[in-house]
Length: 572
Image (cartoon, rainbow, N blue to C red; front, side, top):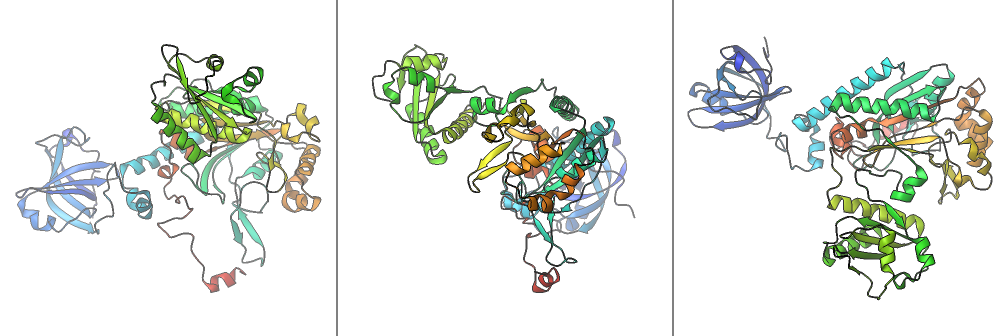
């Protein structure tokens, strides 16, 4: 028995007259009385079938998503469908077999669907039949192949590392797995292969990579899942410039190979400059709206509009937006207050005729100095925020993005990658009242900043780097500490006890004693990278079986409760 001689996407005009066997799912049925048409779909495409009265009774028992096999002849189609690769032909069916029936599907299996995400995730196996999802999975496969080809050709060795590891208290929350064989003991699912790839470097491996599953018990969102895939890489005997040079070429290669897009040289920006100019360490450079600091100007001159004790006065200039009505501006301000918690927002419209109005009713003749400080052009709209440093910086960053969205500046097919370097080594954790690693405890500090360790640890820069594309963090990495004395010093300033170091990191601190080479690496989010390549935002569409934003798999109903017998077996 043969299920098919051809697939539904390969037949064309030159095949007219051939006897063929096709198998696939019914996309649509059109009953015109004397003739019945069916669009048959498989993995490869769609083709039209035509049935005569002879098979009408059998055809009328069919429904959408029935799986059928047909024998027929390729004939010329009377009314061509130019939107279909097989649109010049159809199959005149003389034999029909039903391979499997189907209930009416919960949503149409079409390229475009308005069905809500929850339903599509519950019936993900049906969603995968849609070209939109199927093509995303094909793209993922192609990118994975190119990643392996590029890295392998450049001397990287693909090595698997353990998934079941020891729990450590640093980093994100881990998923914990109880051990049946060792009562009262637990594994943790690996958040990343970080320590193992460092051990590979100590083991003499020169270049390592792995396309690996990672697990973090964090809240999900459109660009984050609790289980995700990393392109994990590490290299021995490298410094920051080596990593940036190689992996910039790696990303350029993928864009060129997969999308035929030639990326420009990546922008290089320090963390402090990113915060100063954009209020975030993941700035979207597709639009050039930068922060303007007004503090020094306000201190030097008297402005009736800014009689305030606030520590920060910053603003942004929205080019060619003085046509915005007051109602439109107040709608934006209301959004800022409700969604972002903004307190004091000031605006100035600088008209094309070089006159201006502002949100403050006071007759402040010095406001023109503000306009000049912004280097505003006639026709620009200025927003100014007053408040406390961390809060206002974040709020203005959100306003920057909101205005870019309103003005359609974030073009999905434009790509602006940049490296953020010199990120902080430590950050203050208000909850625990201590310093924590900005990345992880094995990130190397810049030697010239080590003298700040005792009094100003928050000012120490690290040998770290993030790759940002269109406002999304695609990759993150660092040069690692390879000197055991520096490593112990960092542990000490993180407040780790000797007991904790030994219990959680003893295996790697021991390994550091055996001639650890200088080394560094980076990990890219594969799901995010593919999503960016396609100009999309939701990584779930590029994962075969994703979780929803609550971390639930609606299809298999996971997580679920265990019965008492199973809990007893694992000593819980």
